[in-house]
Image 1 (tube, rainbow, N blue to C red):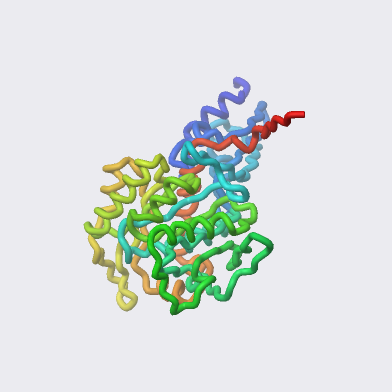
Image 2 (spheres, helix red, strand yellow):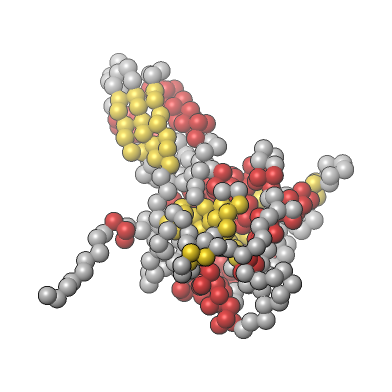
Length: 362
């Protein structure tokens, strides 16, 4: 029998598709080390996304694939995660204290974008990442209610300290105003408030900062696209034709400003009757899939129209923490891993690795 070589093992791994990346783990450059001889094989894999809930399962699947192909029983797979900073718009550089900013957007209101954003933030945190969420809806902030938070944030010198809920750092204009105070501001004041909330908050070593955008493609979206370093965007829609038309406008906006769209999330995809279990696509079906195929963007997942998701968000205990083992929470975590995985495949930002050179005249 011929000796097993590193190339033999690598050829096996080229056939192993990471479900969160959509490509094989060799092409994704997650294989960091292979050691092989006639009796033992060891592989070191470093994922570019958080995956606490599936690490053991993924490692065992890789181990089994190698063992079955080579006939060697003694196979060790060391699997870990290392989240890096990814490239942003050409004229910008990543923020201090924040590796990646991900915008969650929708072209239309009422599609459940904010509920999706907060559950994605909690899901990424549950998978092992350091996560923050910025509520960019200045006119209608909802994240304080969804996270069960209230009261003014603490101020330390010139910085605002983010409030903390379920391990996620949070900032919103809703912490700074009374609940019944209307924000009667024009565009420049709104965009200025967004920048101040983002830049004056002392984010603490975040892997991901989720920005929950207001619906549409107005001043805030333009400010985000032109002045805030965004690594990627996610579009939330429903299967309804009108929602999809607006979602397509949002997708094209990000394309024009060179922000990669990591994928589409279809919310309220199907209604399941709580009494009889009957399933009915009351907003239509297949719309987000058609949109993803039309624009070459991944459909990250579909969420049901579920009364519990709404009730849990309204009560300040979003689904991912209120019912972590429930099907909806599992879907949120699957989507979170996929969007982080898609981001891991984009270009890295290496600016932090280069020294800053100062020229001083003596």
